Length: 345
Image (cartoon, rainbow, N blue to C red; front, side, top):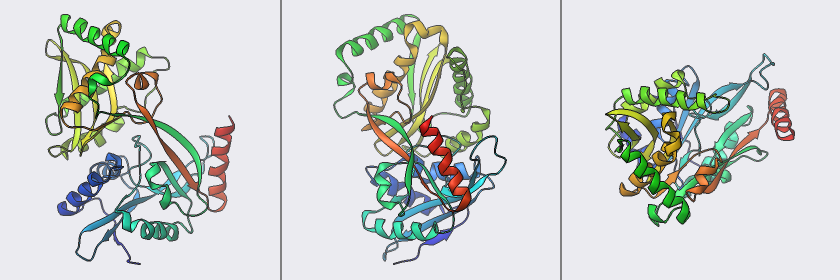
């Protein structure tokens, strides 16, 4: 078995970053959140100060064959418990709401990466949140599922005019006509086309939408902006943050934000002016994004976590992420108890 090279800094060689991007893009189950853009930007911002390591495997010809980014984090079993349990986890997971997490691995390296991870997790609790099902074969013995989240996604191969029911598509056409009559236009901004001011518009509109909704609570706030500004700054053509924007008189009244790479798009967040709720601006914004993605060569439109009904009206099908826990010691037992109580509740 070949030992990986271990890198302990987010400041990687640009060639390695490009090879890592390609490794994720070549994998039909590859995820934006498993690639260098998200992982490294997250490590520099939300994960700043966290000890991390990136295990890198190369073939005899020097080609990159596997990347496994790990970090040492701390999790409190309960908000009333002052002690935090140290865990070995995935860099890029945790705050920031990453989905479909996991390493990027060529098929012939999977057994080797699994064996190395099992050795690495011998003495510390292993916590792998939102692990994509494609990586279940990498789990060490004894790991158990403790959380699951539905992540609906659309197959765009049939074309946007064949998604959802006939009645749903007709309702979307009527909504677009109403919005157009009110002077609202839609435009698609691919990676590298948007500036940081659009993130401020997104946050403002997201707050308005959440305030109008029951509860009004969201983890997408100003504390998250450094991460997303870093993602915007690191975008390259065809890979990075992309936006569907609704405007009236030149001003954004709706913004849908996500990540475009390879032939995939991950829909991450949205915000829109509630004055246009009766005209279905939110649904029309998603519909416009689906159509823009299809025109741009996207094959999979991923709604990410959450089983909100509107996603299924578009015809989305679930892919389920799982949180896996391999407890070690008293701290690991406490985390296991926490998840058992959550499920029981």
